[in-house]
Image (cartoon, rainbow, N blue to C red; front, side, top):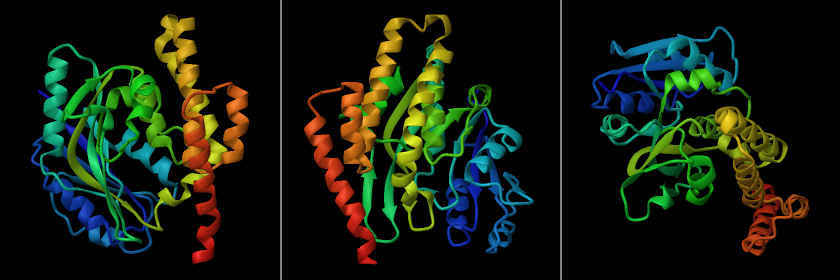
Length: 316
């Protein structure tokens, strides 16, 4: 049997969005499902909306005081969820494919029946900007013309080249997540950090079927990415090196150490460019001695992003 899936819906003051999130899970055709709503002490009437739903699959928990986004993720996973597999849907996002979970679990089960140690499945999304009305389809570039595929060494060989990551459409193994320490640090990128850590323990399935919508608006954490990355980005990447060492154990040879160090340093440069820090980028190019072919492109990207960030407040 594939096993039960826990859908975690962490929420805080998302009254205008929460119904769409809940109903998008209720429409899922996967039979073994529980819905864990972790309300971080909302004060906008979110609780009243949630309590209107009488479906027996819904389990509602409300924190006595506000503990923050990441602590709420962790509490839902470690204290409330009971499924074999977990997927986390923030209260302002929603699913669009009723067979998202059943398809993911089918692909996971088929792979595991062939002896593949699959630790998570990740589908494609649409990114919808509520502030501008713009929409973008986000999918796995590494798949090319294939609709889905199985990958080893996700962090080392897939993530950076794929240029895509989605928390809301990732179904992951709960017992592995809780044993290795998911959602440990209060950082914006803790979802990526946790799943990248998990990828050192097995293979992943990537799927280009469109499964949900990641809603971007002024009220969510997405707008804080740039400033937080400047202070937290390198710490995150250094932690990933430690996670790899722990996962590989005695097999953490000089070969793997060199590969992981190189990937971590290059990813740091790429993210500095993406977040618009040309000065930091130049400093770390010389620090790491990573003079590869994309450096001119990264410098140009960082400069453009920095200029846009500087003029953006003037438009308000």
